[in-house]
Length: 173
Length: 325
Image (cartoon, rainbow over all chains, first blue to last red; front, side, top):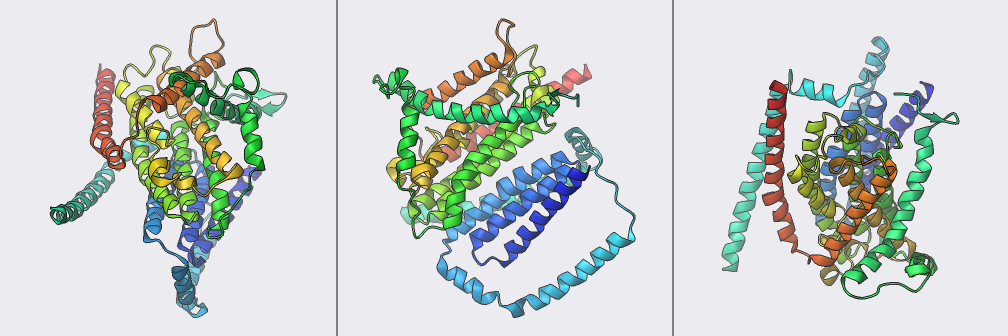
C-alpha cells in the first residue's frame, strides 16, 4: 500500500509541475508537451485510484487524439522565434497578480474542504464492464446528449468545409 | 490474481527481460529479413555477404550508424529533437507489455489490455509529430503534419474494428480474448474487422504502401529528413518494432494467439503466426504502390468507417439475439 501512496504522490508531483510549466512556457510546442505529460500523469493517478478504464481513455482520447490536434494547429501556424519573443513580452510578473489571487482563493477553499471532510475512501476498483453498464444504464441520456453535440460539430465542420471547397473549385474553373 | 511467481519474483517482472530483448533482437533481424525477402520477390539477391545468408548484415549496419556523425541541426529544437526518436521506440515497446505470448506468458494481464495497446500506439504519434516539428525543416514539418492526420484518423478505425472482438469475447483482457477463440478464430465471424484492423495497422506503423509521412519522392525523407546516425537507427528500430507489434496484435485478436494443435508449444505457434503476418507486411511493401494522400484519407473515412460501423452493428445484433435465445 505504501508503494501505491508513494507512486500516487510522485505522479501528482509530475502532473502539477508539468501543468505549471505548461502555463509558464513561452514556446507553444514546449507548453503542449508539458500538457501531454501532465495528462499522462493524471492517467497514472486514475489507474492508481482503481479506475483503469478512465486511465486508458484519458490517454487514448486526451493525450492520443485531442492533444495531437492541438499540436497539429501549432505546427500549421508555423510559430517561430518571433512568437516566443512576443509571449515573453506578454508574460510579465505584473500579469501574474490577478490570476494568482483568484487561484489562491480556490486553493484556500480546497484546503478547507479537504481538512473539513472525512478521509475519502481509498479507490475501489471499477472494471470496464461496470463503467459500460453504468453509461448505458442510468447515464444513457448523458451519452446521447454528448453524441448529439458531436454530431452537431461534425455537421458544422462539414458545412464550413463545403463552402470553402466550392469557392476553391470556382476559383480553379 | 493467482500468485504467478518464480523463485519468489513475480513472473511478470521476469518476463520483461525476454520480451524487451526479444522485441529488439527481432526488430534487428527484421531489417535483414525484409531486405532479403524484398530481394527474393523482386528477383535479386539482397544482402548476402556477411555471415550465413548475410544474417550479420545488421551488425555492419549498426557499426556504420554508430560511427556516423551524430548531427543535430543548429536550427532545430535540440531537446525535443533528441527525445522524439526515443518516444517512438519506447511507445512501441510499451505496447508489448500486454501481449500474451503463451498461457500466462505476458508481462501483465491487464483487464484493459486492448485499450492499453491503443493508448501506447496513440502515444507514438508524438515521436513522429515532434520529430517533424523540432527539425524546423519544411519537409519534416509536412511529413509530421501528414503523420498527425493519418495516425489520428486510422486510430479511430483501429479502435472500432477491435470492438467486435471485444463484443464476442466479452472482455478487454487479451488473455480472455485468446481463450474465447478456442472454438473458432475470430477472423471468421470478424472478417471485416480483421481487414480494417490490418489496413489500420499498416497506416499506424506508416509502412509502405502507407508511408506518406516519409514519402521520399516528394518529401526527401519526411519527418526524419534531419536525423542521422543512431537517432535515425532508433526511428527505424521503432518502425520495425511497430510492425512486429501490429502482427502480434492481429494474431492475438483474430488468429487465436498462442492456441494451436498440441504437437508444438504455444509460444512457437504464437511466433510462427506472428512471423507469417510480418512477412505479409513485407509482401505488401513489395507489391502495392503508394496511394496519394487524399486517397488514403478518403479510403479511411468513406470506406473503412462505414464498414466498421456496419460490422459493429451486425455483431452487436447477433450477440443480442444469441443472448435472448
